[in-house]
Image 1 (cartoon, rainbow, N blue to C red):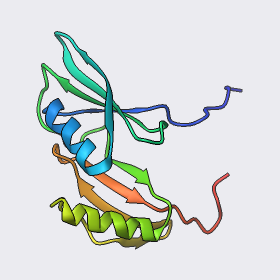
Image 2: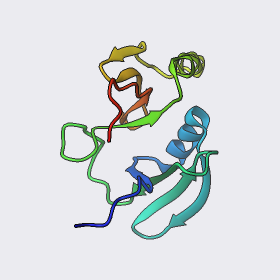
Image 3: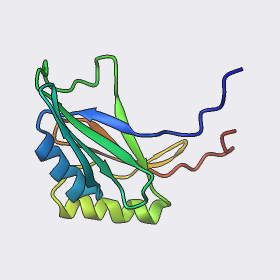
Length: 136
């Protein structure tokens, strides 16, 4: 039997313009850069949320082959948890104020969700998990 996985450590996204993405993820979602590593292969900035638990890498590959396409194997979308519907409504107002195009809040069988896209057209979600039966 394999040892248990205890959670998600971090996520790294390939982006077309690292500096633009660092600025956007900071302005929109509150990520703060804390480590930069540039070399002949990539430009990378590691960012963190104020909770100290959510880590996001933004990597601009110098030999990038094209823009993001969710239909290719790999990342389809990235979803961030929020506490409740009131927080989701506050986020909707914030995104609108920032000029970020977003969906209306949609109710799903698992809870309400708000969708929007980053500068590379990666779909992002803000999500409130409200399962009928909590996962085990």
